[in-house]
Amino acid sequence: MKKGEAGILIGIVVVVVVTAVIKNFYASTQEEDLGIPYFSTADITLAKQARKLFRKYKCYDCHSLWTKRNIMQSVPAPALDGLGSLKDEAWFYNYFSAVNPQAIVPTRLKKEFQMPSFADTPEEERRILAKYLDSLKVKDWYLDETKKRKFEKLTGTDYVP
Ligand code: HEC
Image 1 (cartoon, rainbow, N blue to C red):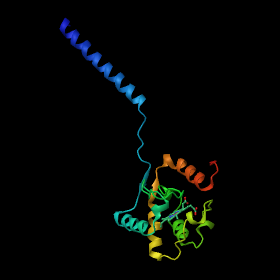
Image 2 (image 1 turned 60 degrees about the horizontal axis):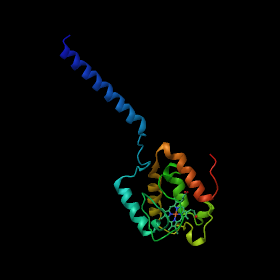
Image 3 (image 1 turned 135 degrees about the vertical axis):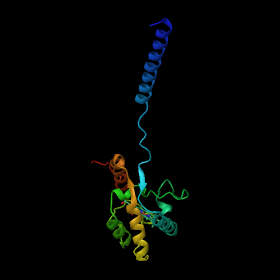
Image 4 (image 1 turned 180 degrees about the horizontal axis):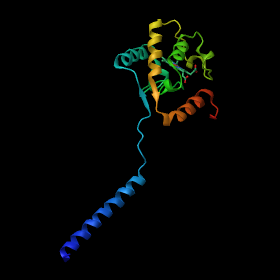
């Protein structure tokens, strides 16, 4: 091997080794980005219908969903993101149809801040809301975190899994 060739070979080896070390270093310092844990399985039609009802019944006055809520209000209602992973469509329909929702989800809030009854609204609307709420999912890796927050918000006591 000539002197020049050996130099080139050493050069290549150095570049390869340095690249591998740098790559490894960054891989170990950066945590994997898991992204936003919430998603919806609703199609566009359902999402639009639900959004309309959310405005009509002012759900955003008390609840947040997709970081959206009425900032002029300060009702400490639970966020609705990911709720469909905790309850199902039948549960939501039943809840929205209840004359006394507090018999299903207990509360520690003043009457004016509590979840209103939607028992008198058209059945079709309650079905749409139930279907949409059911479509709001949370990814598995975030589910326990969600359960914990919901529990503590509703009961004011620590969550023990
Ligand atoms: C006046 C404020 C207010 C409005 C308006 C309101 N909610 Fe609520 N909601 C609450 C509160 C507070 C709770 C927690 C239970 C309680 O305190 O009654 C709740 C509970 C819920 C729950 C159960 C949450 C859980 O973690 O189990 C769902 C689902 C829900 N609301 C959906 C809606 C939808 C959909 C609308 C609009 C159609 C709406 N809410 C309108 C205040 C409100």
